[in-house]
Length: 257
Image (cartoon, rainbow, N blue to C red; front, side, top):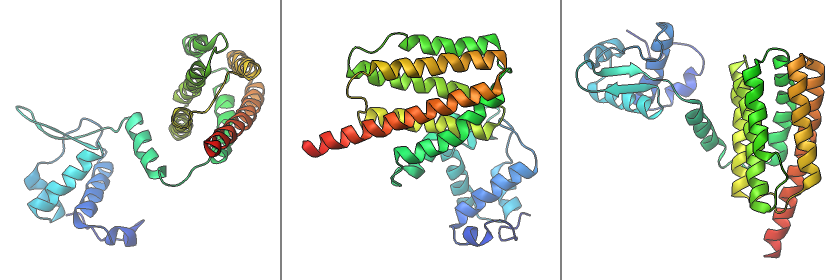
């Protein structure tokens, strides 16, 4: 039987949680300990009751919590039951976004992380991407091959350029690094739309951004890790200045209104 109060990380924190939450945590620990993978069948309710020494109501509430998190999938009918689920990247981004919703994350906070991570990502990818992967990046760039004609197109192009960075993140061998870079790109895309950043087209900045991305693709193709790192660092620093300037313009317009 699993001991829900056994010593271990976060024991004191877990002890303050409700019983169903503690049981849900214990079930997750059990899944990891037994090496279960997405799609593997979980024990039935009666076995869960015996395994964790809890009532039927507590087990059911714990399973509902895990279903809400996407970690358990329940199927009905022949061959039905409870199975280990797999949380999608988009769902994980959304859940993490909820955590930061009221924490007043600034543009500077986001770029502090991006400047630390993205140059290292591209350095690790230099010379390792296939022509198909490089072609994916160039295909994304084709959606903003010409400068924007108005503010709406400018915002759309900026969101598309963030897709370029999210796609790079998907190529990462380090899943944690790729996840957080993709998350940063998603936050910025949301901010661009929500705060209505980019009030008018800036052709010079469009050109600089595309030049950086085109140069980066070539550095990745020829396996130039140092060159890729330097290009991405310069690109991130330029983007940081641009986003901060645009945020200041939006705030000034808001105060005037």
